[in-house]
Image 1 (tube, one colour):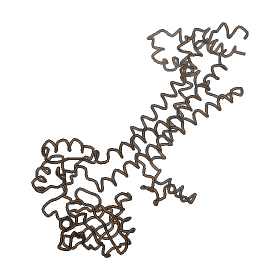
Image 2: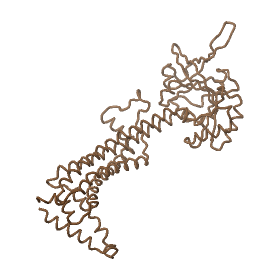
Image 3: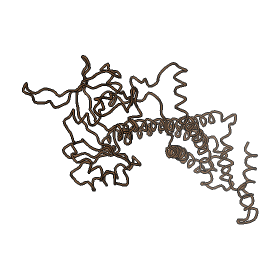
Image 4: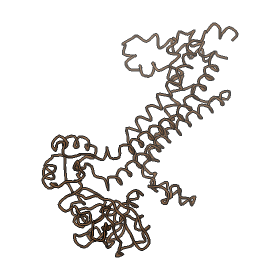
Length: 446
């Protein structure tokens, strides 16, 4: 039964061994003669009538690796997109770097601002006044964070003016007592453009009649919408001069907001400014103010990577079972190759090549599908929502209702490398078992 295989293998090995090392024949045809293990490994991957079940398990392993790599690339790209969107929306309100006084106020902020703007990493600055208060309309009362801003300077350090839902950012002028509300806050109050609302300051004023709350009526001139409940439901913007009169902080500001060229250089800029300004001022940046939030995103991303990598690991374990069955089925062939002089290492390479080929095809297929899905996910998800008439992330429940995606090539390289490495590692034990085949024991009864 094995005569034909025996003759072909013997002739191939004999021809390879008889080629003089360094000869012209070896230089010209070396690539055709040397990969005998590759030729046999590729041959073993082809299905025969008696090995259909083994081939089916091989296809299952390949499909599992494809699905795992596909899911990893797609999910991590979507998580990258969510992180980018959240970061942009947070930085629309928060500043890259913030300088405040130790007691919470800056009285000489113009001089401090000159020192700050001279720093080479700072692009622009804007003062702000911050306080808490109550916003009233009719019978509705809501607590809010009151922020006084300079509309002209604020556009240079924040993207909040670009998120106006109704009204105009330029309508916020000094002395006009205008106010800009978050979309959720305006909805809760029932306030629209042109309506009057009353703002109650946190500290009252002493009068002959006793302590009375300090309040002022404002006209709603704008409504912004960031898509983050924290800001849309709890932030109200005033002109900084109107805020100073309301909060009784004339000549003082809470701090100075800074914009830098690269937001990831914020820690270095913060440390540099802290050394220049000294201990009289407090310098912070967005990485400190939201450190727990972004740390939670990184942990979630790492855990998701590990969980989805288990899909690839399970498929790699299927490669182990596939090769063990192949080794059992091909023991006579391996015994013949051993009797013809093929060493244990070369026998191992036959089955390593076979298993690695399964992993390579699955990894490449999963990588290609994953890249295509990640690039087009923002188009695919709305199409699926319209097809099945469902909404995956309702806007009334989730902060971000769409599916932003950001494909990062380092993630693709890492995922494909780990997947292929797991596939190669899965081949080592079955290949080692094949190399330990005893020809005399196997061929005794053949």
